[in-house]
Image 1 (cartoon, rainbow, N blue to C red):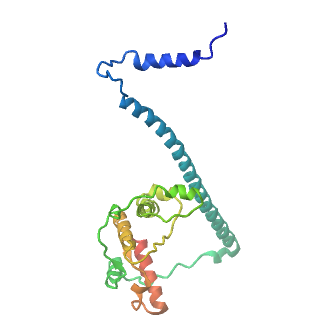
Image 2: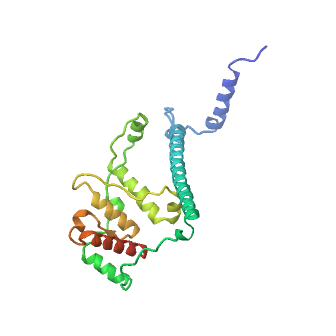
Image 3: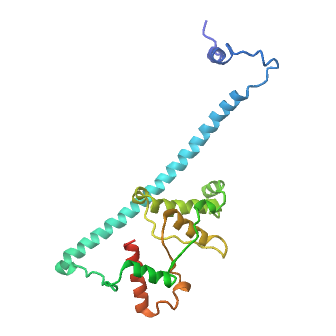
Length: 242
């Protein structure tokens, strides 16, 4: 006689009974209600499996984006290196660049700092931790981006971007070396939306000096082209010797 088609299912059920129910004391469960811990364990395993697929896909996308950004940066650097090498071969002795003239050779860094503070270029800011910028992340934004839409970021999304692009690269040399180079970041929004607060939070988290080079702040302080050249020189000299 051929084996029954139900034999495999019966064996699975029998092994499940031996593993879970054979030695279980159900004297305290005469109504045969469900066991919450067993249901929770089974559903947790299902949810974890689903989340693992979603997270793996998101991580794969993030890694691809990071790799693409790194490849672009390396390509730009290699092009610049080739151009500088060609210029060096063509110019010969003339390739030696003149060093930038020090406009303040007889002044100390302390005096430069005092001047920038006195003119309101270097400003004192309130100590503000990044998590003082309250708000939740938008978990629906990922699904909308998958549909080709560009949803507005939530406050939590903005806080996360500031951490990833400003605080972590500037606070950790390892992350700075292995992350895409971001030289500037634009914060746009109406008055009172938290732009200054985010700047203060970044400065607080990394212990930075705040230079306010906005047109409204520098107007009339370093007039004319010579004044702007001096301002740029003072800022560069102070930041390079920070």
